[in-house]
Length: 282
Image (cartoon, rainbow, N blue to C red):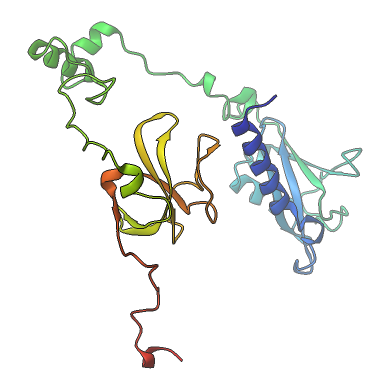
């Protein structure tokens, strides 16, 4: 069974594809008369150019010049083939002075580029296969001779402090180094002081809402206050790591805050138009 994140990513990808291609069948309806769109393939390249627009009265030489600007290679070493009917019908566009209209080109057909240059940079994956690119290499001895490198910095710091680590964990529980400042102690009457249903304001941001949950949250030490916010200014919908702790209006209407970041009191929902005078709107 695929992981939840993988399924979600797949659904998002499919939804995006459906949205992008929803109007594909009608995409030529508003196209200017005398123009067509074709896909382009190259014999040396994996990539393809989709839906490039061409004037039907462009000469084959003019088409080659346009494709050259898209990175298709030299005009002098370019042969073009028009493919239609699922690539089963291929026409060699041999005359540079004839037009696309003459050869019967149309929407959704394919132009295949054959690069005949024996010294083409694209041949053998030269423009796409990064494994063919010569990498710069440096020996450890040469690197040690350099100043102001990361290795030199770590060495200098360890001379001062043998326990120095470049990416030390945060101090506190499960960490190292100086102990973290202690978090304020959770009130013994937390369930009374932060009772479910009470109005509150959460910091940072002064976000107002209603307390919906008080207690531990899986994977996070201590006591947490679950709040349904008046505005979508939170980070969840009352769930944490797939487990629901309280219900709220929707995504981003929920948040979990530490006790010290929640102020209980008379915090009515804010009216976004309260600052307007009567004459400011009608």
